[in-house]
Length: 115
Length: 108
Image (tube, rainbow over all chains, first blue to last red; front, side, top):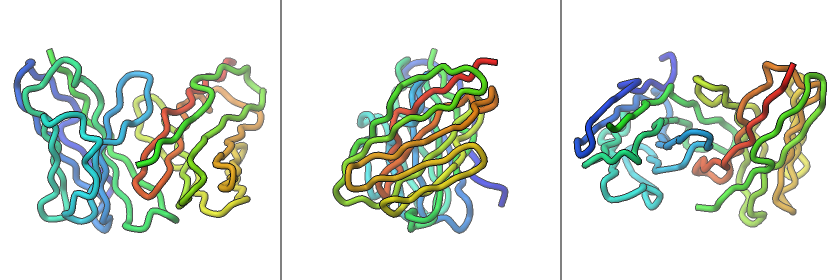
């Protein structure tokens, strides 16, 4: 396992279409995080999972955003009815369940462009 | 989820200058603080994980201190080099919520 992988790396979609991104965490990591990053800003927390349980989703940007981690391994982030304002880099990270002493490892991100 | 603040938002220094920036967080219920370095077109990479009041960590020319009672951490870079140019992020709580970052530019 070479790290966190995200697919696709780039996505161009038309406004109003649905898009889904995938994140494969480091295999032994229980926690998986999703972030959005827009130009000039730090990563904006969206949601996170511990195993298959979604423990925090209040920061999801709207009800058009949803995330799943059905088997506690890979996760998907879906954006429905995309808007131009959704254009951003979407980052995934994973960590062990006790992040007090451990770090989160990030994927390369998926860059979404809504035209 | 608690919010993290960082200052300054951006910083421009000359090569060889030393610099520092701040991460502020609520001092109650401290869990851990992480510093990350984020270079353009790369993924954030961890610099330090800090857990105890008074912690001081060092990696080469970069060091960090932690004050959990007053709710801040400092990151120091000694003798800045152009390759230090990046966004420096701190993350607080057990949920890895990041601050907005400090963008450092080191001019040769």
